[in-house]
Image (cartoon, rainbow, N blue to C red; front, side, top):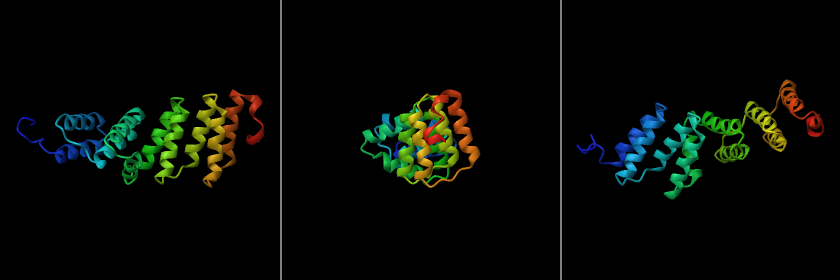
Length: 185
């Protein structure tokens, strides 16, 4: 197909990237993006948004960050990309996935960066997300992170049940019983 001239426009590459992204085929989307670059084409904001979104939906945090950096290298602002990503119905799930994957990996700084980026573009956090992040912070022996996520519940006006707080206190008590005082009780 390449030799027949079918791929001689950036629009064709971008259509293939979009389709692969919608089908959650990150490998194909990345392959098409790489081929477009090799052919000398510059991808649009939407193509980068498709790549970031696809990687996020698949939980590929590192690849999402790679595509954001590649877009930035082309002069495209990360906020522009994330604004395009949240126009997609799965955007909230994608951001939650990136935040959660970073926290699961023990990278609370990356989780916080993705969380802040989500807030900037209008993604509202849920109690479940913040409680999960509190527990991950505790599991990583990073109680300051847990306290930060706890405070985010109040900063965002998110209500929660007593059972939710009990989960966090139980997690903390299992790890650091001496710290089950202060803001937690």
